[in-house]
Image (cartoon, one colour):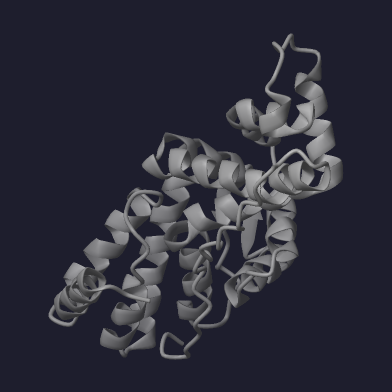
Length: 263
């Protein structure tokens, strides 16, 4: 539910976007590409696709954007030389995946990876030999939960240290109940060679860790770990005298709307 300030902000944004030129829209997209984790999740391309009705002209802009995205992610290749369709639909998927929603996708991947029991136990084992002082059992229940919380940033680093392949990244997003259509489109593009993975997930993580959203994502993940693992364990073992009501998870809006206006 939007509050009054949210409604005013959205109305102002829509008014501004409704009164921009093609050049301004192109500039917005390029700025967003240059700083994907800090530039917001407004979909500037939808507006541009509505404004540029000549599909060949829109293709030229898409080619510019593809070049800019590959500059930001050196490990990403986009091969369109043999692609015999207009580029709007492909660009929209690339734009949503690697730019507009990339911070949310990173969070979903990390959460799904850690919440997989086999992965979690393996990651925690890396830190089990580290000398850890007596932990507050009444607060964390099991030692593995304590390690998971206090070593969370290092554990997340460990996930990416081995070099996560884009295919694997997509597979974990698809395990969640939030996988939108454009994720499937990137998976298909990867399969046929339109998108080439030369270490792009490592590029994504490096930028993610430098962003302001990284710390808030880790805080959110700590709350999810507490809600999913620690509180149920404490309750099941009679270690909580008062039941703590579950917190409502705020869903990640991964933007699954589709339209055909961009060709």
